Picture: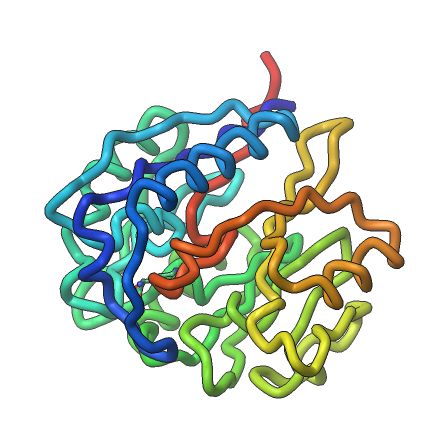
Length: 262
Ligand code: CIR
């Protein structure tokens, strides 16, 4: 099994990104680009075939490719991001994904950010955030049900996306901030809670490419990182400080898709 990771180089306009729950700080663009390159290298080291799209300098948030599409084994759903400034980012991602998957689309008035979608097997959790609306959930459910996915809407608070609050770090094991989303919404899963003074620590990127399995994770949450390692998770820790200033995290910088070996 091959795992493709689609990433996009950092926009020269990153400093002008959307921000919702973090205060604006100066971003060191060159450092951000180096950190992004190290992120892409970590994906490659974990066995991914990395496809790098060129930067879109007019679109500040375009490095966060996760928000414009959600890729399943059967199809990819092009989203309609909740932030109007981000609605043009998807076109070139769609062109790249079309080589691998049939494309479906969320249409107006629906909005959905890929950062709000957590897939665990055939269960798909979607966060009721400021970016994803009821029309978006309804369309998403209608598009996915024919493929046997169960789409469930989850309440959340105080953060940008569902995956700011909860991500999967192994089969049936979640990393979660219980103050931003209810653990009860994920009955049936085991959970590692983030350290109380590391609220932003719930976003981890799980890579399971055939024999290789690991998690890419920011190095700025040492207590939560230790909890994952204690649980036996192989963590690759990276510095992502400049993209975090743009309210980004590790899941949002890539789109992963499995390719059956031929
Ligand atoms: C935004 O507010 O849309 C960007 N500045 C950050 C998006 C991060 N995306 C993600 O976590 N999936």
